[in-house]
Amino acid sequence: MASATQPMIKSVYQYDFIKVGRFKKQKPDWSTTENYEYSVYLDYERPDVEKIEQTMYLIFIGDQIKYVGEYKHTWWDRCIKRRRCTELNYFSHDMGYSVRDILDGTGEDVTLWFLIDPIMQFQNGPLLNCNRAIELALIQDLIADGVDIWNKNDTARLKGGKSVREVFGLTERIN
Image 1 (cartoon, rainbow, N blue to C red):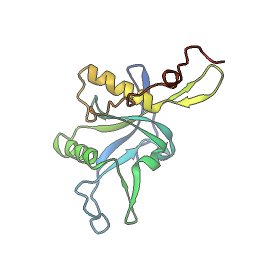
Image 2 (cartoon, rainbow, N blue to C red; image 1 turned 30 degrees about the vertical axis):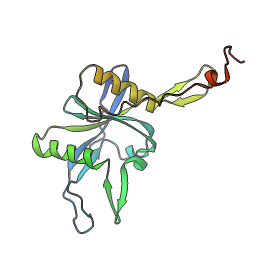
Image 3 (cartoon, helix red, strand yellow; image 1 turned 135 degrees about the horizontal axis):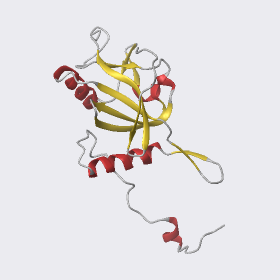
Image 4 (cartoon, rainbow, N blue to C red; image 1 turned 120 degrees about the vertical axis):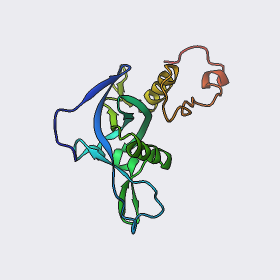
């Protein structure tokens, strides 16, 4: 685990992110890890990173954004899966292979950053976590700016359909 030093914060477009960890290679225990060809883990900046509630995250290789994601519940729920009583950091096979290949190949620094505040507040007070909406907007901005990210196909907008107003012919606002 990394030392508890002053946190690193950076702005990406208008959003502030904090560095929460660095990816590193680990030697897997093949007696308990079935059919995994890669093994990477996160060296967290703080021990309780896994308790952070839903937000969005970025994976950087050096200074370049390579992945934009979001999760619900906690980071523990998003990333840690139990595999035959061994806890492994788990994203997806493709992402794991990509991180492993970077660590094996160029040896560049691969880091994880969390959006500091995905919460928006309505005028009348209710709070709303907008991590998914911010994730999609950021992916689209990065692609429009020509940034080569791993998840460039994850730009899905909601499927087209009719609004409630269209279906019911509502033209005026209801109090």
